[in-house]
Image 1 (tube, rainbow, N blue to C red):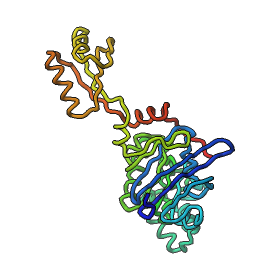
Image 2: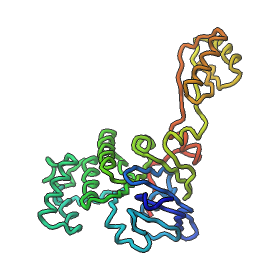
Image 3: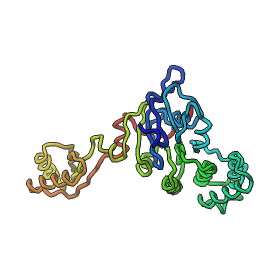
Image 4: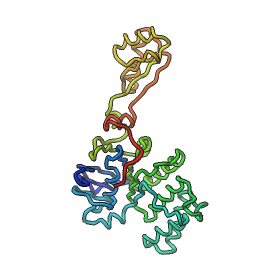
Length: 317
């Protein structure tokens, strides 16, 4: 692993709470200017990983470098280089949008004029200018998450940890936040994302790791992970049971559903596999009324690797 070329380089990270191992040999490498997504079921250790890498708690073992700084020996430099948006908003409801941002600017020692300038810039960037004088308690869920992320950006971090940033948001607000994340990455920011929304990882992540019981059980691009699990098939719909029987004999494999009058033939969804299915139907003189191609998605990957579906939240340790 070339840590010098990586925004986040982690090797063999370990963490236990009592006799419960939460992270075991956690190893990831995230190039600068990319998005890395960490998927995992409830209690897998995702939030613990974020808390360690953002210096909130100490690891029991392993090594990590964040933005070129050693996590164990130079945590102050790590803190200066990163931003963190957790599962729960850091927004102060008793302050306005502007006041929340100016407060963060003060904490970063930006100075009054620079802090005001930065607050105004971020309010415009996150489409919050019209609501800047309103108390944050009046903001919608999507507005609060945008303000929360804007507060994270006051110090212009080059590495940002987003721990389930769109949890609880409506689809429109979620897509708005996705666009903001894409813009950040296009500007060279590195994103470390944990999420329970598999579509979110599919949309945003350059690489994805699946964490289960503290161990990474798979890692790769979304396409690589989808290809790693079985389950692809072509679903053929027929007009009557006689045609279904003929197709079942012609293929000699597949899963039939007599009630729906369908046959699912295994295939990877590629053009060659689809052409083979059509050729076999043609040779047998059978015409399918409808044909649907199913390729494994991240839900299939997640279930195959962890044995259970995603769940809404992971308890914060």
